[in-house]
Length: 290
Image 1 (cartoon, rainbow, N blue to C red):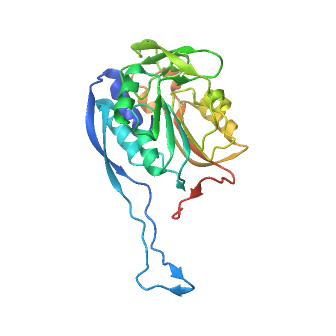
Image 2 (image 1 turned 90 degrees about the horizontal axis):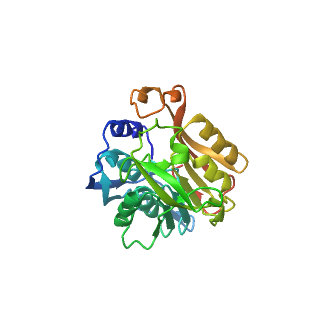
């Protein structure tokens, strides 16, 4: 999970791997403010009928590792906002971490069902704790990886680590020995999943391979993170025919390479995010203020 601040807290983790979960309140600072508009009935202006959208700030309490506080806060405050509305959607949350996106998405798109994939055993326990008794969020303790494998090696530094990932990708970002935990985790082939209205993928390097195999035939919105320029270009190639890029944020790696956990070969490379909307989408609509 990333943002402009993401590498700052991540860099702190390179030196120290504290994993004590905290319960921190987070205000869900929602997604839009609209200009005032007047309603009319039967062609006649109605006095006093001017309407404004009310922006809710919904308190949430999540169990999170201390080092992840700012990243979680960014998600709950609308890091994934795109300006598209919808209700009753199917949402795939691939790389769920402790559940911040799932909780935000369930509030942002009411009546939706979020299926959240998180392979790390300790992080999955936090995900279950944070989404306990939520019928609209289904946690799945597995990674997504194309092919017929049933398990794969997964590396991390602590439960709730936002830079955990499959070992097959971690070597593109981290030096040998940076990830101190290793697990054999269950794997689901992305090609086996039904198409969802919204697909969010943040799995620290494997986004391109998963997106290449996943069914996007019914997908209106794709929310992606990427680790490097090669990963970015793979994602863009997959999306270019049927989707329009609606938001991109990119950062250069160089300022972070003083942290010895990252590969020095990343100098000059980039990381970031891209959000894309289907051309001529039908199940979602652009918000009134966009």
